[in-house]
Length: 81
Image (cartoon, rainbow, N blue to C red):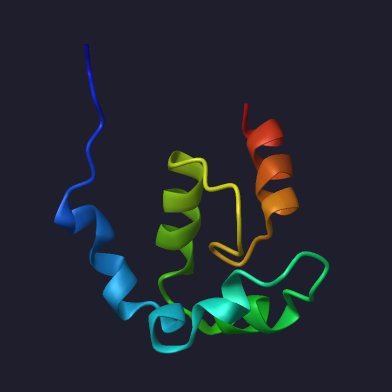
């Protein structure tokens, strides 16, 4: 049996991400709330590609990751396969 584990190196990008300096409220808004501000912050972040890859690899179902909403990530997963 093979179990994937996340090593500290895999998560090093998180310390440099702009979201770490902001607040979770932008990235995990109440249902129906706008994610525009989160996407604006993501667009400025150099860690965006690593963040998106992490979200896709770990099947993150909630929030904005790598500049994409839950629905956008689902659509990206569908088109990748």
